[in-house]
Image (cartoon, rainbow, N blue to C red; front, side, top):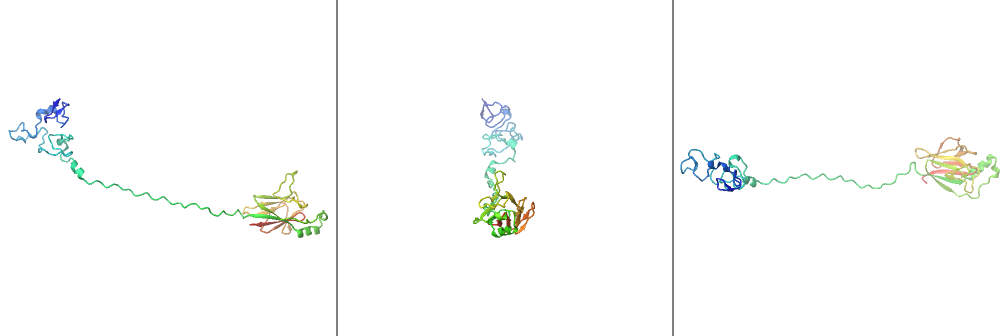
Length: 262
């Protein structure tokens, strides 16, 4: 095991493991408290100006600027700081340790999330054009007018003794009026074959059609006895607009009144 000029045992025979001094340059190393090799006795600083081996004369016991341990050579025995290389501008750890800590960095709080009002169920909008209903009854005044006109079988048709009022809600875009016929494959939405059945009604007598604005119109596709609206016969194949309360007459006594909102 080698010994450096400062007296430190070192397993490395080139540089001291304690102070870092080059062991091979031992003859040129001069301890700080020893007389200068080229100066006169009693001149520790070296009167000839030769000083230490590193060429830097430093006061004995100079504290290491890194760890504060008193200097014993060119390298700090505690941390290995190189006094000759670092120079006077090296940051003193003591000053660094005494500096006040930086205040913690603060960040602005995130903006609050937008508040979304809860969805509330509102009123259900009314159906397009409102609800329409067809009210079917037996009209004695219309029957008398048909009898007065003297149709082919008018004398054989009697006005019903009792005919209950029937109501049909108009739905979809087309509502057929007639008499149900299995053989003909006709099953109208407003079936007038229920007793007392009007013998003057054709199997497919008239059709109600919904208009784009939600209102309705009536079409006679070619019935045998014709169709009247408010007392006037309508041309076959031509849609006739209907208003709330209009009356449609067909057959021998049937009245169909269209009402809105009922």
